[in-house]
Amino acid sequence: MSSEERLRCRQLVEEAVAEGAHRRKACEILGFSLRTLERWETTPEDGRKGPSTKPSNALTAEERSRVLAVANNSEFANLTPWQIVPRLADRGEYLASELSFYRI
Image: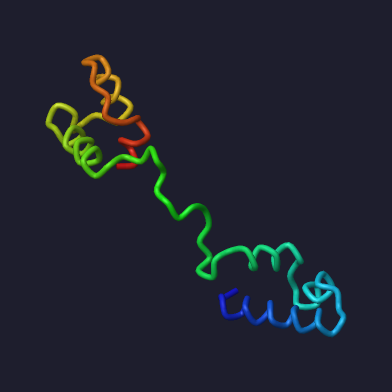
């Protein structure tokens, strides 16, 4: 359902409630649950979910470029992140986790 349709449904429910109807019944007649209406009221119009801020432990641009440089190095070019990170750890180096290497 588009954001315009959601807005129109919310308006229809508000009108029905103003005329004395119950929210739940108005939602049922329109074909969705009261919980859906509540979610539409609290979710941004563009449908995004989750925090809009960057995690505090996210890698910096410099750290990401360092991971790329190491992963593309001829020594590690044919290895998976699950092979690279332990080899770096044996040398006493830690750049990022295996999953971070894989995502980058």
